Image (cartoon, rainbow, N blue to C red):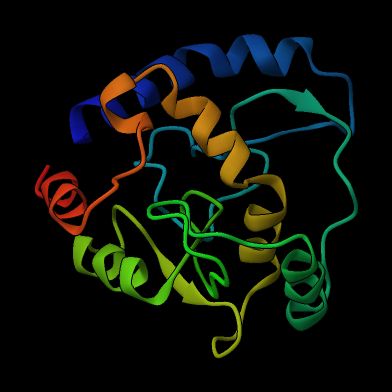
Length: 164
């Protein structure tokens, strides 16, 4: 997983100048990966991102309101698919159940910065990452890595995945 992440970051860093040159003013790109960084800094500048160019919605101001809207869409855990995912990986803009959030916390903040959607205080930058991220965009990125796309169906498969 770490090797795939490093390779993706390398590609992103090479593409950033081209993306910036093609992007019209006041546009933003999704799936944030800071230039020259590991991509795990939860406070990374939104100007230092990579992904598809699109008109960005206004940034969320209130965490409780933002997550209430997200819950109305039916959040599921990105790792195991359980409903009512009330934790999030700010690093990837994805939602997690409490068990998977614990596993992500065990990985360390340099790989997955985990916050509670109900108990933690969120900065505007973190909310923006969640707004621009999302499980669908993350899964789209993972499609280029077939061994990581399939959701684990058993706890043994999940433990095997976390051993990478």
